[in-house]
Length: 369
Image (cartoon, helix red, strand yellow):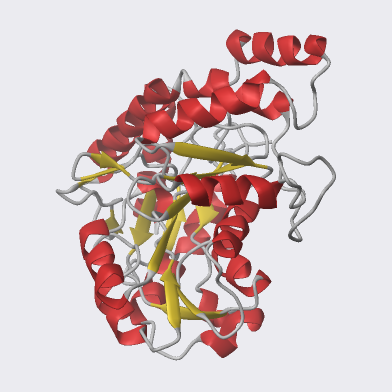
C-alpha cells in the first residue's frame, strides 16, 4: 500500500445510504430506480439529452460502435496514446483501427494527423480526452462534418472537462464515459453512453439488454449484449455525481499546487491546459526531459521508497503486438511523450501538505542526481 496513491475514490455516507436503500428495495441487479435517475442526471450534467448506463466504459465504446453500424470493411481513427480499450472496441466490431499521432502541446488526438489518415473507408473518429484534457473539438467536428464521419468521444478520463465552456461528451454523435474506481466519479465498475439522438439512445438500450424488444418481453429482433449497469452501481453513482464539482475543484487545486511547486524545476514539463480548455486533471502528469541525469523510471523507483505511487504514461498503441499491423503513419510525438510521461498522486483525499511533500521529494531526487 502506498501512503500517497495515484488515485483513490472518496466514498462517504451519501453513497452508503443510497446503496443500502437499493439493497433493501430488493432491486440489486439491472432494474431499479437509481439506474434511470443516474442516466438522466449525468446526461443533464454533461448537457446531453439521453444517457444509457452500461456495465463499464469499454462496453460503452463497443455499444456505441455497434449502434452506429460500424463493422467489417470500416475504418475508425484512434489516437496512438490512449488506454487499449479505445482500440479494442474497434476490433470487437471487426472494423480496422487507423492509429494516428497526438498533438505535442496537449497530448490528445492531432487534427492534422486525422486528415492524413482519412480514406474512403473511414467511418468514425474516436477522440480521447486524455488525462482529463479536452481534444480540439471544433477542428475534429469540422473534419467529421466535411467527410461525413461519426464522432465517438472517449471521455472516460474527463468527467466535467470543458472545451470553450462546453462540457466534453456533448460534441460527438455518442460519447462514452467510465466510472471505474479511479475515475473522477465512480460506480465501482460502470460506464455511460450519451447522445442527443433519441432513436440512437433507444437502439443502444435494446442492444444493451440482449437485443430484447422492450414491448415484447423475451422477443429478440437483434443479437444484443448483457451490458447493463446494476441498481447498486447506479445508487453509488447518483451520490458521487452530487459531489462531482467538489471533486473537480479539488483536482484543479492539486494541479495548481503541483504547478507552483514544480514550475522552477529544470527538466520537468508540467501538465498542460490550453487557453480554450478546462482540464480536470484526472491524473496530474509531467514529462521528464531526456537531458536530465535521472530517467523517468529511476525517478519513479526513488519516489516509491517514500510511499509515493506514480504511473507511467500509456504505451503507444503502435508499439504493442496486437496493434502493430494498424500503424501506417509515423508517431514521433506519442513515442516521445509516452516514454517521458509520469502520472503523479492525484487522489482527492490528498491535502495541501501531501502535495507539498510529494513535490519536495521530486525536487530532492532530481537534485540528488
